[in-house]
Image (cartoon, rainbow, N blue to C red; front, side, top):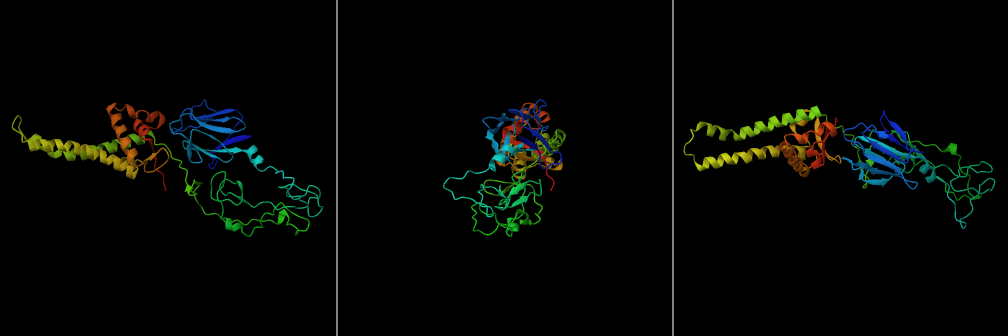
Length: 367
């Protein structure tokens, strides 16, 4: 029976059997699989059994669903696929599909006969021992055991198909006898028994759990933790005071000039022009502070003090200047709404400007 394993590499892993045709996943307690995460929608996705195949379908969630690192709206699932929903990782296992993948192969009638070297009885491709006398007819394929999750993986392979952990170097298995082809004749040399086949894997280096992307490079899954409301408020207050202090310093010459004059009196046009020029300069200073902090550094000074960081929905850090500009526009729109755009932080963890720019604020990872 197929099942999903929530956070398979964690000590708090959970398994859910897919015994129903439709299994819902989300933050609401009414779902079949409940993920208590602010980055997970109330009804985030469903896994549906349709036409002898399992499919995952995203239910228009805010943060989307990823299968092996790719954001999808609907995709068929295969044994070993890793689904990312919020900060949770769901490993899909289908025992029936794994058994079918290793089923016996029916040879073409024109293929040469495969006979046991001892009793000359025919055997099928994939048999390790003769069905008549029990003699060894083929050696088993070399295997490696993942040091992270304990899954047995057929070689050659570089990564575990269950958790993506890097397997021991394949060069450690070069001395291992290669699997004998199924085309065995009575005149051939005797085959070694399965007990004589020993694997001597090297100790793997400590590397982070990773998934290979389309280019073969390692792609580290981000298990980002959403930023709490209190920390975001403290960071916003700190940044606001810093920006206001800088703008006051820029506007101070104009303020001091107008306070020293007695009105009404004749005022030079040059003084008026310079005073008005200080206003966009102060506004540009505040905008530049947020654009550079979000787009280039990934965090403002207040967020750095509170241990927070801004990233894109796809986990990219920093999110870039284009997203930072959209975030700043949404920030100003929220201020014009008397702070109403910041209220969704308490419910979904993302403010209005986060949804407009496609960003999120998370806890900064400790290295």
